[in-house]
Amino acid sequence: RQYVPIDIEQLCEKNQMKLIDQIQEGDKDSYYPLSANLFLIEKDNKKFVLKENIRYKIDFSCLDGYNMELELYNELDHPAFPKLEGVLNGTVGDYLMLEHIEGDQLTKYTSSDNLLDKNEVFKIIGKLAEALDYMHSNAIVYADMKDKNVMYDGKDVRLLDLGMASNKLYIDQSNNEEYVNEVVSNAEYACPETIMMSRVYKKSDVFQLGIM
Image 1 (tube, rainbow, N blue to C red):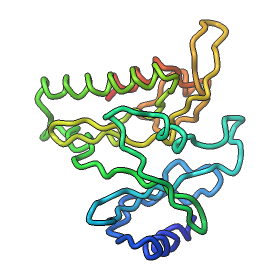
Image 2: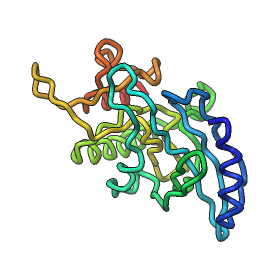
Image 3: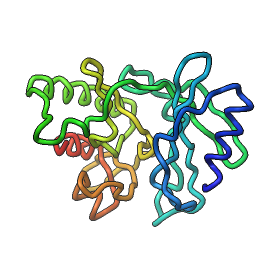
Image 4: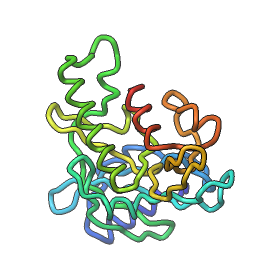
């Protein structure tokens, strides 16, 4: 994965795109990476984000193997999610070409000296609840609700990063509820069932939203 930046430079040159910046450096684990490389690019005077499409090489802890981000972006049709503009095939991997979302991560508004008005908070939570309801109604569990994954421009609320999301659902025989197998990606937002059983239910998404 250390060759990804070079791969991006070559792709940009080949596809007549301008590389503006690397906006996130992915972790160095080639077998079970939890964070992808992200690049801001420009094509035809319009900005996009190139995201490394991570495919896990091993089935970690008997879980489901690889993320389903590409498949889910093709399936989702809701204003809360960035649009998938295409897929670029590089030498060392594939890259999702995503709509560039303007605004700030909600992280900006979590410090005590920069909190949002409560009515604005209610509006944001409501929009996120609608996005989760849409996912759940389409048999998808998000599994990674946190302030870093939410963009807000003062008007629109957008939910980023489907790397942990999945539509590969199982049935809990004890309560007949659907869940996906996941590892703990962020201990601050982790649900008890994820820590204890590596499971994320639809209600786990709501739990994480409540923490946020």
